[in-house]
Length: 346
Ligand SMILES: NC(=O)c1ccc[n+]([C@@H]2O[C@H](COP(=O)([O-])OP(=O)(O)OC[C@H]3O[C@@H](n4cnc5c(N)ncnc54)[C@H](O)[C@@H]3O)[C@@H](O)[C@H]2O)c1
Image (cartoon, rainbow, N blue to C red; front, side, top):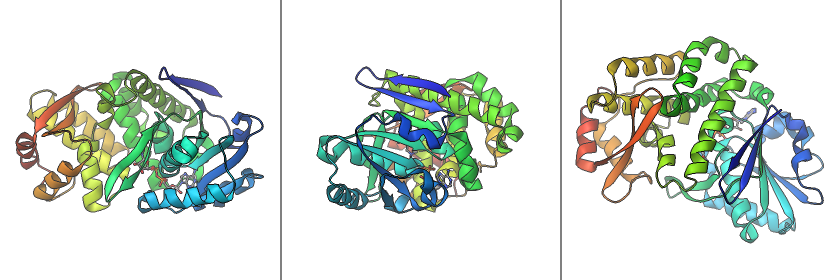
């Protein structure tokens, strides 16, 4: 087991990489009333490990990441007589972790909580960094809090029960971490595609480890996303809009979103076309799509509604090279020109 600490100055979170899921209760402070929040798929595979704790099950899918789910969970917490001495454990992918962190942060003004992160996307991204929240009135992650989990258990073996498509989707965020912050990691991702897709544990260990370290450092520098943390949105400003418009999965949308951001970086003269080609090859190598025909007016509208917009502009995350991202704030007029010029837009 390898421990990676993220210290924001006000709190510390420990990621426990390669800690078996069966050991999760060892990390819960003694004397606590423990309540598990999970979903039906995790229950199906691992419920025998959840005894003797109370379980609250949330529905599957993004449509359940809502305030009404939060209310239902709070109702169950009241029934279970959860109080400030209770400890909440979210066991699941990004949806369970986002919901758990939020409800644990607001119920009785905050209970202690930790995660067992069970999807690749959640291990490398969603469970790292303390952003917790739900969607609201169709806007993604519109309501939430910054609050670090005490621990995040990442057992690579649980990824074996993850549906293949979900496994593949996680690589989009790993590629993102290499592309924005670490050229060496990018090259490693590039060179180890077949091994990673074939579940080589050493390769996956390095990818999850480096992703947590990269994201952790960014979060330590800018927990509340005033500047540096925005770089983690590489591919997401376009990707979230695509996800909303087409219903494609997060990983696929981010694959295409990263290519759109790379195309914009090339067009604006920041990135070599060769580097953009390299990125495209890596994304495609991990069986993720690199383009999509989409109505450009609808895309622009959807991007205007994204909560990452601020005032009259949009913070685009662009690349100067593989491993180096920067924030480029553009007006809506400039964004329109960029989008209308893209080859993946109709
Ligand atoms: N908080 C953040 O910083 C952050 C960052 C990125 C993404 N997110 C959020 O994460 C969510 C996506 O997370 P996700 O991709 O993990 O989706 P998810 O939570 O829906 O999990 C994907 C599917 O896999 C199943 N599953 C998960 N682990 C499994 C396992 N080990 N075995 C069998 N089935 C398993 C789940 O039940 C679900 O059906 C989105 O809501 C996104 O907004 C949050």
